[in-house]
Image (cartoon, rainbow, N blue to C red):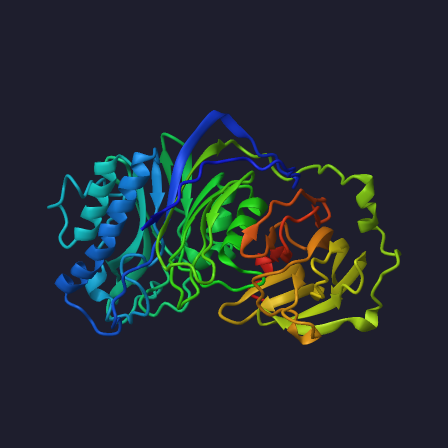
Length: 503
């Protein structure tokens, strides 16, 4: 397995999103995430015996053991492994049964599986994870399957499956002495036939001596209100994010949205993904509002695991949204609706991006001002671009406000500057990995939500930190960035309008 160790380095940038981030005294800690090339069951639809399922999972646990040892030797105090990393994917409800263990609620039952292995039956995986944490003196976060009995007859509101058991996609956390300290059941499933949605959303966090409190979410949870936003409202400033995320450019590449979530929510995010070329899975990182340590495999890279380690600051308590510093005078054009536009309204087209009908206008010149609206939702752009090698790359400014309905249902408002896949207008919104044109730009939208997630992604999956992102009390969000170091693939303000999800 390839080892990649990167220490935390702060970006020289300004973040003024109406909330003040502070670092608690001089406290820092060392975190690790592992992007795992899972050893798969070749026939996941065929049920295995418990013994055979254990034999399979132990192959992945052996890799976890190796990586926990490497991380601990370099000072890591916590390591995060990805979703589905122990067993893989595509199980049915019955075929996954041999992989499941009953995980006790640590808020009710104090249990150290490593030192009390006989307390519960069929808990071999929990025992190995617990001993791994204890052996290397490191917090271990892993994802596994939990089975719990449910009241089939006694409680008509329990939504109990007909087989009388709940099966949950579950994150577990073991303290550095092996104690089980947290258990979280994934709320927002993504085509997971093997698992159930818990009867009630769970807001699970745990305390550490080295960095305070961490909250737990899993994969698709990152796009929804529960449990993520509620955890943040409870004061959690550090989120742990095991995921099995399939990349989708130009707006929801893994590292792109991981970084956007960290910036937009002012939190630390420890994100561990699966590595699978076939499923387009890669992209993990350790993100703070000030810096990002991440890995994203490129086309042709060896398909192997990747360990990331970073020393990061402990975030202090952030202030609530309040009076926002106004943007400097040179950006005042963003507040004038009567300014001239380079692109007349007739040039607006509708093209599909991420399965949604975006309204696009095109960047016809090397500099200018543009505006595009989807209904009453409008996006504005001031730009100056520098094509390289006489490049004729086509760029467009897109806007969409509505409910996304493919592979999930959720309401969004999005402003995005994207490189089109080709010279044709119809290619705008398609996936693009590389670009040559660099930009200075200011991108702005007026949103009906506080939950806006900014990102700048350049050629070959490189993230850039926006120079400045600001939010006004009226919902106007402005992102300014100058002289992109790489060719721009996407600059995006992606907002989630949670209160409209059920409309």
